[in-house]
Image (cartoon, rainbow, N blue to C red; front, side):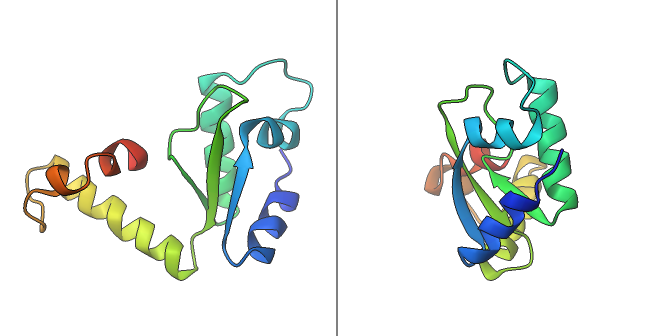
Length: 112
């Protein structure tokens, strides 16, 4: 899996890029006919090694969906990592923000 094209595209767009799963599949495994949950997990891990994160965290298996690819070391990437830690604390019942689920109902879904 070669994601240098994606990494450069994200860098050029100041740390964030909206990409279709079709394009990501083309970079990851052009010989594959479909995206499987296992392949999507491998793609996420490979992007993570490149210093990139995706929103949603769990990549969709349909090629018609779009995801955001974000650099970890930019301000937005750092904010997303903080949000992820807060959601983990919330799931453990020790949220530093009261009523997190009520204020941001889709946050937990996107970062899980």
